[in-house]
Length: 378
Ligand SMILES: *Cc1c(COP(=O)(O)O)cnc(C)c1O
Image (tube, rainbow, N blue to C red; front, side):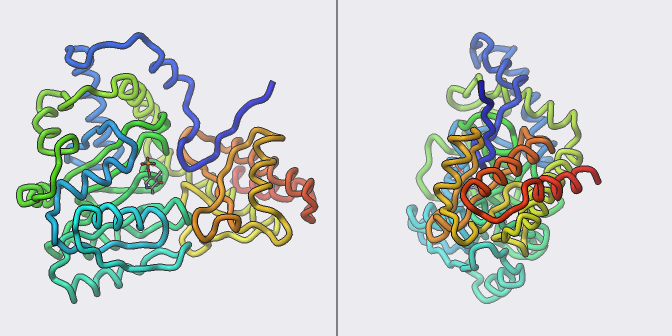
């Protein structure tokens, strides 16, 4: 018998309480029972988003909500600003370009976060910019953006602030309304402790005004249609019923623990992983802007990164993930996200130590575990 430990930045592990809810016999979505549940889910979602605005539930992975953000607010030929410091910032640009939107990029080095003043400069110099696209946690590099600072800049302009909070929401502090975020998107398979398949999107009044002028084609992802249905506690098309029933449970678990406590737990897990890595003589990939969601670590000299990840899985059933694009083979990423507690950190660090030693890396067993324990005890 072996247990599986999934420590990837999506999908993440699922609480058994949530799995059990989703295993119940299916019900119909146009029924009072489901509508009641869906309304309850919407209230809970607003709490987790810390917003007064509606948060729409979409049937897609997170990228669907990213696409919805673009097609509902913009028209072909519009200009937008995209912060690109990894795969997901890049994705904002690719979606916008696919629809004929002009993209101005702020290119930042992988592992670094954007300087909010660079966004300010672009907005001052280019009044045509209609939207600023950012990423709360750039999952490919582990870097966290100071969305509060960005929000304070964008709010004084005509542009809207759109945030990919897919891996960050529920792991990092994130205040949609207080931070003047016009659109925030997230997905089910990260901190929200569900399987993949749902995406979420919040829309501010400023963003709704842009939907009135938006000419990009949309049908399934029309937010206006979603808003009309939500008035009756419904979705325009068939709801992903089982996932929404699971969501009802996972959101109650988050709110029962308390959103602040959930964030603190993630903060602690993130710090434990970083301290453990350092104690093991490993180098962090994004030390200047660490996140609570995922920690990328540079693969040490002499260790085959791909083989290290493979051995973790084959010998100990611990799954972490490698780097993408030009950092493939150079970094590995440990997620501390969602249904995880402090002892999951001890497990992954322990397994990492064992595999590294097996691969010939000079390390005294327990060094990393001890460093993690010190953080977890504090
Ligand atoms: C996981 C993730 C996405 C994801 O998308 P899917 O469409 O759900 O695969 C987008 N952005 C970030 C920052 C992510 O971590």
